[in-house]
Length: 94
Length: 311
Image 1 (cartoon, one colour):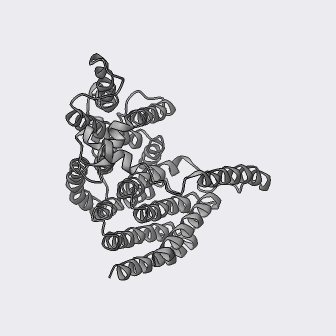
Image 2 (cartoon, chains in turn orange, yellow; image 1 turned 90 degrees about the vertical axis):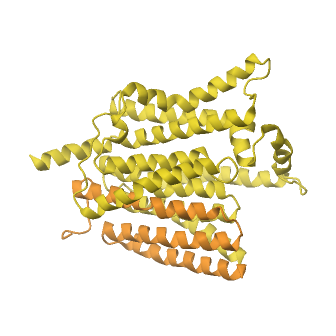
């Protein structure tokens, strides 16, 4: 059963690697930010699976923190873009 | 299966790190850095170090993103490609250092058990239940004490760059969009709750002062993002006192052991004192980190631009 959980976690990590394509290619900064958020969600799931696979329940706290804190970067991003601090080079019509 | 997992995590960490160094666009580097934190947290999990995984989750997901995103305001959005000569100049020393570190592995005896047995042998003396807390706050207390000092110096550095004595005057307008306001209302109490939970957990399980301090700091930064003065509400004298409380409490405790005719940094009544230090350290870590974000110079520029567009 532990191998199954580890395999599922591996699948989620591969998903993150696939999502990196969106971070590398963009084209908009918002696309990159949304990809990072997706990684946060996937990371929560894979940490929970790892907690089960490695039988180490306190890893769940790391998952809890990711669930709680990933949104902070988005808030900063939205704040900065609405202020015009982050200059968006790649798109003219946001 | 475990080996494949570790290999993929390791390779993607190296790949993402390479891209962070090489990419020209700062924003992409920031997003990759957040991803790097996540992968690192997974790696620590696999290395059976939930403490570091939790710390990495708290710093990587929360504050690092906000700090870097704010710092972006003062930088140009792209950077120049480094010269090829410069690349070699850095690459060879890095390779040398990495080789040196790899070389040390040869000197580890085959039957080496790590420091674990030593720690568990000495653990009853501290009256603590959790070895990592005992190492951080008792056996290696000196390191932890100086780390609190490093945080203080970081805040001082930011204040020097900004040429300011306090963190006052850093108000933000409230988020205009309802989603932002709603999510802050929802998450802020949870952050305070989970910060306290991690601090309480630190006495007997993975968690503790640093993790709790980072979560509480995230709460403070979130409050600030909601357009509240947050930490700037504190009178500046109280702000300074709370900021140095962890460092000073540690120092008082360390020197008070001299009165008992003992060595520096041996605690009488260990558990109570250690938990006291942990609570004070949490408070000052949280306050230092909030001050770092609030005092970051990027925001001032943002304010000026916002004012410009308003006028």
